[in-house]
Image 1 (cartoon, one colour):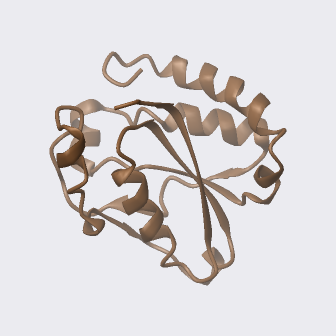
Image 2: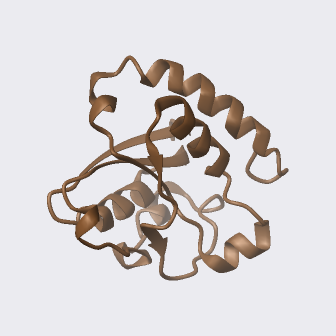
Length: 147
């Protein structure tokens, strides 16, 4: 899905996850689904964000707005896949920011990523989203690593 352009896998997984997530009480308060963004340069290199179709399927099945524009990556960084756990922790909070207005206040965001390894990327994204007054963040990932 991530490197072989099999975006249909994201749609399939999104539908499957939605069936399980709709039974989770906290999902009822989610107002928007937010993908972990790629930097514009990385998006141009790859041609797609691997979590887009997953988010779109979640949005459709759970009837929750998908908002790919609220959170953005402000700086380009090298891929995390080749870094060890210790070096992944060095992800700066300044890598991510939000473009918000009063309409974004008081929302509960579902932050979505493909894989959680150290949690540093998700933490940096959540901190950016929490700049929005009275916001709340929940997280879902397609997979996680044990290392």
